[in-house]
Amino acid sequence: MTHVTLNTGDTVTQPRSKVLPGTIEAMQVLLPAGGNLGNVAAMFSAFRVEITKDSGAAAFTVYRGREPIVLNVVCWDAAASAASWASIEHTYLRLAEVGQNHLLGVALPERPATTPWLGTVLSPFIGTLIRDDILWLGDFEHCLAVALSEAK
Image: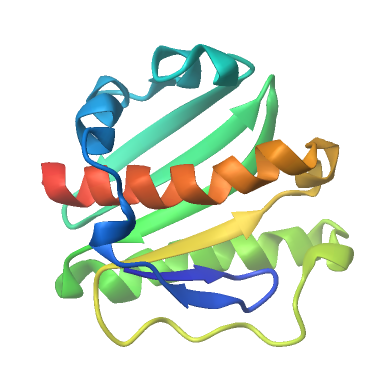
């Protein structure tokens, strides 16, 4: 899966094999309508995720308390790719409109040429997290994106 962070332009390829056995099954509790990350592991009880699933794609936002930390779109169907990318791109550009320029990269990244892909936008509240929380967040985003794409 290609993971693009729109704020920074960072793009990484994350193989399915990076997801540890049992992780997708543990994520199932989150999939129907979103939920509280504390359901996955008690150490993440300060966080929650909201998920909206559509045909070929899904959007999910991770919150710490009431503040959105990261906004994501995962797309696994080429037919939904252009519209899904437009959605996450709109979120990214909306930050510029409300004066969050310190989060914006130099140039808007291109949509990945193939699916599956995961697009992430960091909110200003990302700065309220400690380093350990930021580290697990990237792994969580990838694992949830894989779970969503495989749940089809």
